[in-house]
Length: 425
Image (cartoon, rainbow, N blue to C red):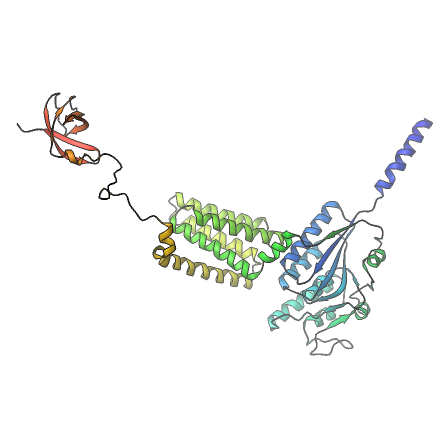
C-alpha cells in the first residue's frame, strides 16, 4: 500500500507541471493600411486561438487607417471573440484603426502613441453619421465614453479641453489614459504581458502570410469589379453558345478567386457559395431541359444574389455589380461585333474547307456511274450487287425485284446510295 502511495505521488509530480502549463498568447501584427488582407489575418489568428484554447489575443496596432469596411469587419471579429483580447497601440491607431482599438476591452498604448482622427473620406453627412454610430456603439459595448468616440468622427461634436467644435478629436497617450481609452502606457510588449498577467506565457506571433496579402489584393474594388465582370462575361458567352467551353473555365477560375478572397476575409460564407453553385447548376440544367428560360433566369438571379451578399449587401455592392455588368455586356457586344473579322480570329480559326472542287472527298465519288449500264451479280430485293466495267457496287432498285444476270441502268446517285432500274433493250 505504501508503494502505491509513493507511485501516485511520483505520477502527480510529473503530471502537475504539465497540467498547470500556461496556455499560449496569440500576438497579431496589424501594421500599415487597414484592408481586407488585415481582416483575413485577424480572422485566421482568432480562429486558431479559439481552436487551441489560447489564454488571450494581443493585437499590436500601428496604422494611419484604411478601408472602413475592413475596419468594421475586424471590429466585428474582435467583438464576437469569446477569448480575452488586448490592443497594444505601438505608435498610432487612427481612423479605422481607432475603431479596431476601441473594440477591445483592454487597451495599452506606447509612449508617444495616439488614437482617433477618424473623420471619413469623403466627409459626407451620410458617411459621418454611419461611422459615428459605429464608433458610439463600439465604445458603449466596451464601457467607454460614447461622446469621446463620436468626437473622433464628427468635428461638430467637440470635446471640451481636448478638441473644440470644428476640430476632429485625436488623443495622445496620456490623454487616452485620462479618458479611459487606454488602461496604461506600456513601454514594450513585455510590459503589456506583465500588466495583464501573461508574463512567461508562450507567444505565438502572426504576421501577414501570402494568403492574407492575396486576399487584400483580390478584395480591392478594382480587382473585385474585374473578377465579377469576367464571371458575367462567361455566363453571357455560355448562354450564347449553349455549352461549357473555354469561357466557362475562365469564369470558374474568376469565381474561385473572388469567393476565396471573400471567404478568407470573412465577407462570404456557405450561403453565398451555395447560392452561386446553385445558380451555375440551374443554368446548366436549362441547357439540357425544355425550361422555357425559367431555370436560366433563376440561375442568373442566384449568381447575382450570391455576389451581392458577398460584397456586403449595401449600396457599394450594387455599384460594383452594376459597373461590372456594364463592362461585361459592352465587352460581350464588342466580341460579337469585331472578333469574327479580326486578324487574331483569322489566325485561330481554320477557314479552308475540304470540298469536292478542291479535290477532297469523304468517300468514293459514285456520280461517275450515273447513267451507266451494268449486270446484276445478285438478285436485287431491292438491294443487291451489280457489276459495271468490272467494278462491283452495292445498289438498290426502285422497289421492284430484279433477278440475277439482268441488265440494269444507274438512274441516280446520292452520296454512296446508287439507285438502278431495268435497262431498256
